[in-house]
Length: 411
View 1 (cartoon, rainbow, N blue to C red):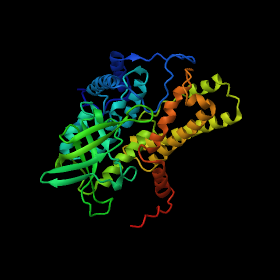
View 2: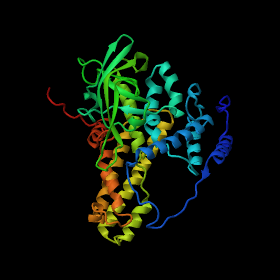
View 3: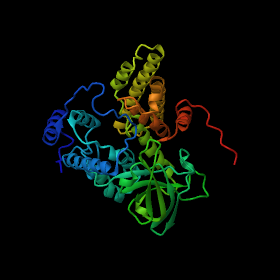
């Protein structure tokens, strides 16, 4: 364990020197090589499609690196000391990330949901026992967490979910189904929202829990996507018992718990997390030159719109993330970031369709052409993940612009 007794007095220069020493001892510096068209992999995808063996190898490398960084004091730099953090300002977190970006380290994508969405919710709403059990373990990657919100009959209308939790003494019995759960096949715990009082209005009768993904009655089934992979799962719960000390917040106050998670989710997705920060602009420009479309005025116009949209979204997101790093909960601006991302991906899909034509749907073997189909096929999934575009527009209209709420359907 890192010595955190002087964590609140360490200077940024001392921190930088120690972080550099750690990284030089445990990782290799990045060698930035410019590759030419036709060299290396031409993969361009939102959701990486990997075999179970590839997923297992990636997870093992990611976990090993997470153990090393946490034990050295860089796994939760801003977190409370009680759970293994160092209680340093967010500027130290940014400093470490900038230093680490110059080194070859394993992807931490397997922990994105657990650390970006589940852990902040546990910190904000869980019992002290649950915090002690799970926060340190999540940040050290001893455990992996997933989010169990969407259901077949209640996707973006989260308040319409039907998974039930019935109290039985000091336990709750959970029965129902969740869907589109990323990483469920690797997860040890899940944050689940259940209906605990069907007689209350739908937003009022919900309660959040931490559920053991290895408990009897939990079944995870992969969902095959049109990309060919299975990045998501459906999860079935049959009389799964959850201790009351694993409850998140008060009984029937789960909507507040859910909002904490959803705002963090949109921060992660809108900020280029969840596997969507994969586009190298140089690849797109090279494609236009290879197909001799760089001087086409329609192509140039659409390319400019993609570039401008990305830059505006990036600056908007940076402002929002500063709020998060200052310790404040993300707000409706995260819906703007998430909607901006999907709008930009839609513009990119339109541009690719214009430029590639049949090459986007028929694999001719030509490097750097058909490979874009994986990105295009992944865009509909991003438009649904973290709340549909339509839900994001309603949030922005009501909470940012102050427009009247959508009329409710007659009951």
